[in-house]
Amino acid sequence: MWTLNLHKRPKISGAQLLAILPLSMVHTLGNLFTNMSFGKVAVSFTHTIKAMEPFFSVVLSAMFLGEMPTPWVVTSLLPIAGGVALASMTKASFNWYGQ
Image (cartoon, rainbow, N blue to C red):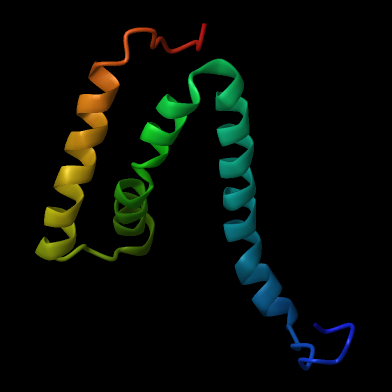
């Protein structure tokens, strides 16, 4: 869209790029580890574990940004954590090395 001038190209400052860099690195690592896990465990198990992303987002936001979750957010995470725990317990071929 920028090449055809359908939208004006945004101007991004160095400070904005510096702020985006850590997020892009973590996102890239997440994609890398997800693709690595496809070769080690069943795809269904990978997606089950990926379902915990909202939980870890809340935990890491509390740890690093000091953003404490509301009781509504914590309550909404309980079924997610419970479902992943239940699905993980029933995965008979799981081990930490992925063999």
